[in-house]
Amino acid sequence: MRIRKKLIVLHTTFSLGLAALMFFLLRPAIQDLVRQAEAEDAAYVLGTLDVASLSEGQPRGQREIASGIVLRWGAAADLNLSPRAIASLQRAGDAAVPLPHGGGGQGGRRGGPPGSAGIALPHVSGGVYYVLDRRLGGVRASVLRLDLLLLLSMLAVYFLIAAALEIFVLPRHVYRPIGRLLRADLAVQQGDRSRELIDPRFMPQDELGEIMRSRNRSIAALRRNEAELARTLAELERVAGDLKRKNHLLENARRNLADADRLASLGMLSAGVAHEINTPLAVLKGLVVEMQERPDRPLPAARAALMRRVVDRLERLGEGLLDFARVRTPRIAPVLVADLVARALELLRLDDPVRRVRVDVRIFPGLTVPCDGDRIVQVLVNLVRNAAEALLESSSADPTITIAAESIVREGSTWVGLTIADNGPGIAPEVLATLFDPFVSTRLDAKGTGLGLAVAEGIVREHGGVLIARNREAHAPGPGPKGAEFEVLLPDFGPGRAPIDAPMSAGPATPGPGGAG
Image (cartoon, rainbow, N blue to C red; front, side):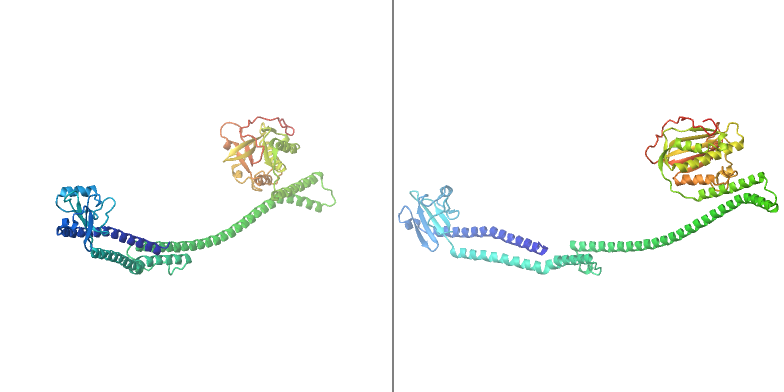
């Protein structure tokens, strides 16, 4: 129900209820006044009458003395007097007693004018009572008109109050403010910002006005926040544009740096290659010049063997460059680490340096690693050959290479670590930092090209692993074997991973080429 209908129903119900309450409260009082007047008039009339002569000796009967005045006499039962009225008459003696509601006995009164008031006298003789009923008809008609006038007056007052409320009070103080609130809310929903705020001139100084002012403040704060948000978003867009532009510049710079780095690496590689091939080319050029100058004499066998070694060196240098530049996707599969080491040592069986050293293998037989087996074998071949040649150059009394493997956890990740250690002189500190760069080692590598360690480091990196080189005295200070140590760390992410706490026992000796296991 709309609020106007609710208010109409409310004040109509209230006004009609108030009118009915007043009517039913006032009417009994007026009726009592009329009956009291009738009783007083009946008492006066009764005092002027000779009731004995009017009854003419009859034991009971009634007689209309005048209009609205009736005299009745007889026994108490004939007059239908109540026991309380009889007691009152007995106590009054010779005085007249007004009867309630016109002589009202239990069943009403018979014979008197309807709605009249009565006065009774005690018995004169023989238990006869006299009752005078008096009814003021004109007064009662006036009272009826007064009742109707009062009712009409109350209805008129109600209509006047309702009209005043609906015309002057409620429209100005209730209906119009609520209508402004509804129109302002509709403007907010439609996005019409020119009409979403209520004009302060039309705000009443009551609770509805407080609601309007609070609403205006909320809408204004919301618009300020929206404007601030829009400015912030615009600033974010500007910053995002700047970041995008700077990222583009950084990406270009990174590409330029990468290009420059590649050019620098290519320059270093080219310089290293040029440096490496200059010496064999110079030797080869000298032999060719000698052959040109003395075409009639055959080349001595020693000179021919030298030329063959120089050409072999150049061939190995070319192969190393191809291995260094080649990028292959590893074919990952679980492989036993002991099998990898056995295959590498099998390939090194005919290498003279490896045959002259002792290789000690300490690998848990069931340890596996996910890798490309052929590529990791190539890494092991390079590392073992380098260690063997370093040991022979150092003239160690008991040249030994130790190959070990274990499963380890570092920074929450599981790895398989293979270490190739020797008891030689170790790696020179000035070479250690750039050991995996091409052409930087003092002795180069086992092939004499300076690319073996770079190729090995690239293969390990393709597997997501790390190749670490260090000197054993720096890694484990104190008494014990010294020398160089290379550690190959490969991620262990596949099934069949060996337990981390698996006991490391020396497996069956893998005999080195020509040496004890």
